[in-house]
Amino acid sequence: MEFGALLLLTLLGLSFGEPGFVQRDYMNTLEWLRAKVEFINNLEDKLKIFDGWQSDVYALEARLNATVDELTRQKAEVDRLNKENQDLRTRLNATEEEIDKLKQSSAKDAPQIAFSACLSNSGEIYSGPSTDKTLVFKRIFVNTGGYDQDTGVFTAPVNGLYYFTFSTYGYNTHIAGAILMKNGVRQISTFDYTSDDSSDIGSNSAVLQLAAGDKVHMELWDNGRVYDNWNGHTTFSGFLVFPV
Image (cartoon, rainbow, N blue to C red; front, top):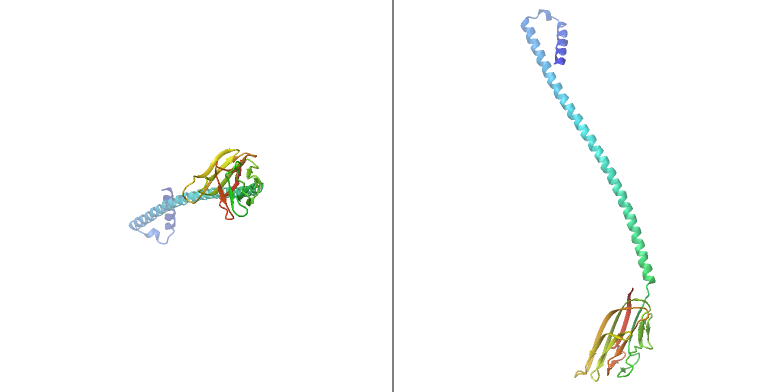
């Protein structure tokens, strides 16, 4: 109201300077003052509204500043995470490259051991019955080490898991089949009694854990016989799965 009183006095002072003010009658002067008071009140109300708007503007500005600060903080956090992610990718790529190198090195350093052979290297052959029941596979398909084609014995060059497979073919005149032996101990076999059918074929396989120097070979059953020719019916194969 102090502002309104001051403004009213100012208007009165200006009014006294207006031409013909002293000639106005009392009623006209009263109406004039009421109009001025109403004008002053309206002006004060507008000033209050302006003050409220100004407060809202200040509050909005404060919120905007807080938002800008938060966005700045979040951007810094995102930049930090991006940098960490890039560092992780770099380390991951380096690790993958190192693993690939180790795989290649392991593949090169791992011993390559495999053999595959069949009984006959020319014509037809019947093996057995005989006192020496060891089967000697003469026709070599592959032999990277370990198999002796003169004795029919495979000697493990290194400790490891080895896969062996074999097939046998025989006629009904004798027991058909053979036995996979490890260091003189029976492991697996094929077997078929003499029967009315003319011939029999069998196969078997196994994974054996061998120490370096262990010996594996195939041998006949007692009174057994197998047959082979250039078609390779009776076979013996093996390879190193992995060293242990």
